[in-house]
Image 1 (cartoon, one colour):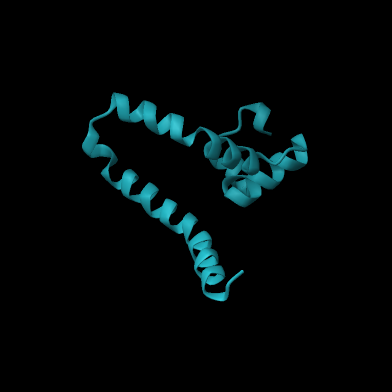
Image 2: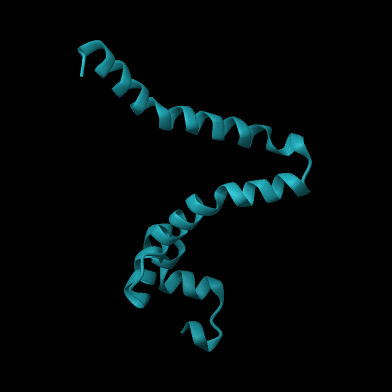
Length: 94
């Protein structure tokens, strides 16, 4: 159907799961045998700082105020378990 010049509406009616994130990712994994979502998340995590640095060098600074705040919040959130652990071990003499 898709290869026979079906319209988007026709494909959506016949294969509605392809228009939902979970359905599309599951179908991709069934066809290809690869978890696309895990790959995208992994690539984003490893390339995010490079991409952000590039965008900051080419776009006006105010465009990134929210991004910088979100990154700072994530760093604080990521450090929280370590801070709790160190505080706990300091109090209990580990």
